[in-house]
Image 1 (tube, rainbow, N blue to C red):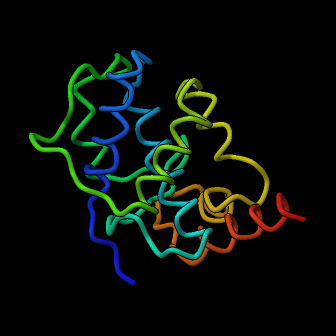
Image 2 (image 1 turned 60 degrees about the vertical axis):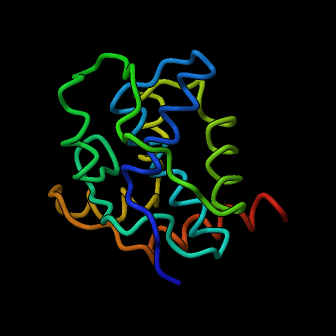
Amino acid sequence: MGARHSALAVADKLIRLSIVDETPITPMKAQKLTYFCHAWMLGLGNGPLFQDAVESWQHGPVIRALYHELKHYGGDRITEPILTEETTFSDQEEKVIRVVWKRYGELDGTRLSRMTHVENSPWEQTYRRDKRRQIIHNHVIRDYYAALIEQQQG
């Protein structure tokens, strides 16, 4: 099953949730939350949430197009949606995005980044090996998050 969305659409949804909840979201936080939405979708066996590649950068997983869209904010709070129209997601996609927001939305970008750096994480498996940017393949993300889900249920 291929992804129907862009990472920008997922980030836009998260930004809209942050505005409604009056909870600050910065570019780093948007990056990590967008990644977590994608990762949990893969781990749950629902296929990718977006078609963009996830890359391993120094501070964790990054979606390049999202980075370029948000970089003008620097470390400041994102104050408005990045898309003119809100994207419609399936019920399952919407649920995962909302659960990720509810679970991680209060955390700042630095804390979320640290969470992506744990031992054997998809980022660690790709970046730590040779400390250069490269794609974190969906199967690596899927396998890691599926194992996390299995541990939580076991």
